[in-house]
Image (tube, rainbow, N blue to C red):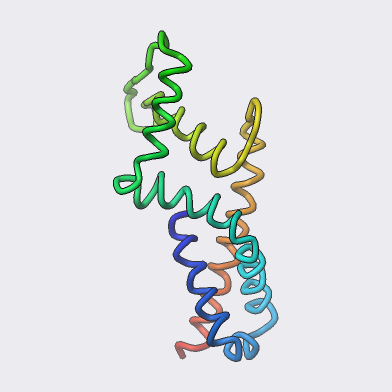
Length: 151
């Protein structure tokens, strides 16, 4: 998502100054470009999902710890007697750092994705699949566009 945030800025730049180059592309490249543009039209959703994740959890978490700190404080206040699980396994895939799971739930699922109540993996997957589809469209567009103009 962090890379997608940067990628979609390119779409905005092209939209402003280079639509003639898009118009000269094949139908698939134009369709992929349009899919990216459509996602960008809902600026609030773009910033909430992709921007919030980029600026809080992925690239700039060291610069913007406010949401992470608030989430941890809220969890501690709601569950003052909770034991925190931190376990190590035979490799990184078997480790658990429970506070990180809570932050993902509070910041990503609740604030960025706006999911309510008990959240299932299907709920999160629905949002993620939309974002992944946009990433696929951008990757397709970029590959076709670069191939066309970098000959």
